[in-house]
Image (cartoon, rainbow, N blue to C red; front, side, top):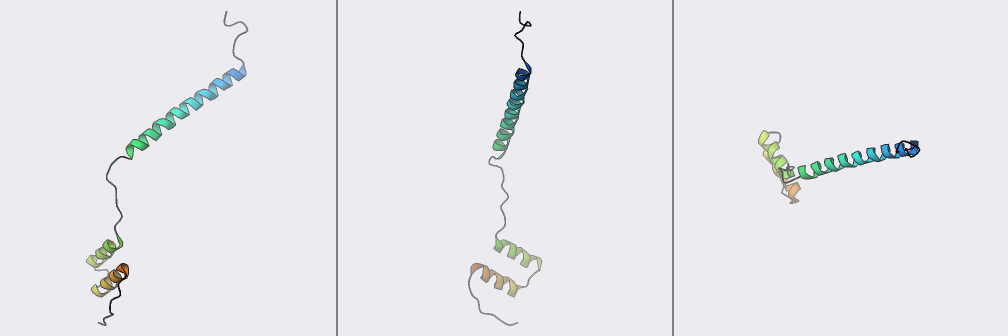
Amino acid sequence: MWWYGHGMSGWGYALMTASMVLFWALVIFGVVALVRYLGRGEGPTASRPTPEQVLAERFARGDIDEQEYHRRLDALRDRPRPLVKP
């Protein structure tokens, strides 16, 4: 019957083991890739504030005065403004 001389050799067991590990690795990789792809959907995205918004926040907190705010805002917008001495 089947157990007389037609059994798998050591190479057969090694190939079976390697193919089973490869199969499960591909299945796990596929599931992880699918979850990451589907999780990337149309969720809320965190947008970075513009430099002008950061400057306005610093002015609102009192980190910089009005003259400094206007000077830096003009520099961001690339418009020269006459320098006024306090």
